[in-house]
Amino acid sequence: MKSLPQILLFLISIFFSYSSGLFADAGKEVESGQGKINPKTKIQNTPVKEKKPVPPKAKQGEGKPKKSPPQKPPLTKDKPSGPGKASNSKPLPSKKPSPAKAESSPTKTKPSPSQKRVDPKPKPISKTPPPPKNSEENKNKIPVDPKESAKSKPLPLVAEVNGQPIRAYAFEKLLIEQLQAGIADSVELRKKIRDELVIQTLLSQLAMEEGVDQSKEVALAFESARRGILSDAWRQNWVRENPVTEDEIMVEYNATIQKLGVSEYQLRQVVVADETAAMLILDQLDAGKELGELATRYTIEAGGKKSKGLLPWVSPSLLLPPLGDWVSQSKSGELIKSPVRTKAGWHIVRVEGVRPLKPPTLKQLQNQISQGILQQRMTQNIQKLLDQAKINF
Image (cartoon, rainbow, N blue to C red; front, side, top):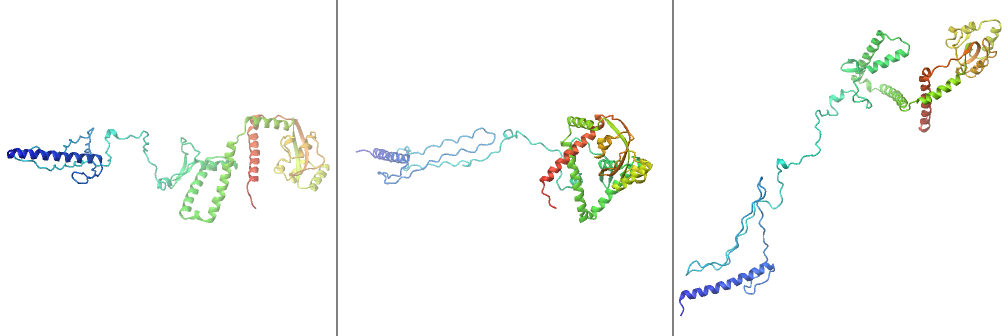
């Protein structure tokens, strides 16, 4: 008969062989992922999803995150602790892997100073930012013509009235108007123009402070002045954009010289308003009266009374038609027998002298010819614009 220790060892070996078979069958079912019933244990096994350990968050400055230490697999069977003792027959429960501290979703890490992106086209830094649109600095600025060059020097000042400048342009414009009116240039004239501009500026400031500029009359005056200024500006701009060439001036010059002819005449005349008066002048000439004396008393020509009807030397082509044709057919000292009618009146004419014509040079007529060509072209262009415009009267 066997002893008690041998019987215990035999039973323990049978138990371990039986339990090892159970664990082997359970492992196969877990791997297959199918929830089948084990024929030995009669327990339905459910598939278990294996959780992958998440690597811990990498610290800043480290190239790669540290690897987590490998976990030991769960024990399936234990060795006997002693000759008379047996270990627990149930398997030890496996510990779940502890979740890593790192978050499952990707997180943005702050880039290091060396990894910061640099804009390939940096924006220019403005040293002096422009003032806001409604600032006082912009209100005090004087509007500048957009066609003026940025490099052009500022216009000189004549004076300032309460901080408002008076430009030299306004002074020169008034001075030119006075000189064209026949007033001689002088220090007194320039001082008078400067004082007038100062008075105009001061009164305009007071008018704006008192609201006079908001009246209907002032608005209409501004509209009329603006219309005239813009129309003059258009004409000046058209002249700049349509210059006359030298060839055109030469062609017109040759035509003018040919038209002048080869002779020029000096005339004395009396101009009256009607034919009856002209016939009475001829009767007095037949009675022995002097033509110069009659011109002083009866002529209506401007300046004719002072000059006793004597005209400067002139080409017949420059006289009013048909007076030029009559003069070109007359001789020196000859009186045209019948009065000649023009749009200026009735002419009683006597030829005082005839001489060869000395034609003017191109330099003398260049500006006059150029202005004539421009005026003719502009008149034609304006007429085309009038034909295209919608005008109601």
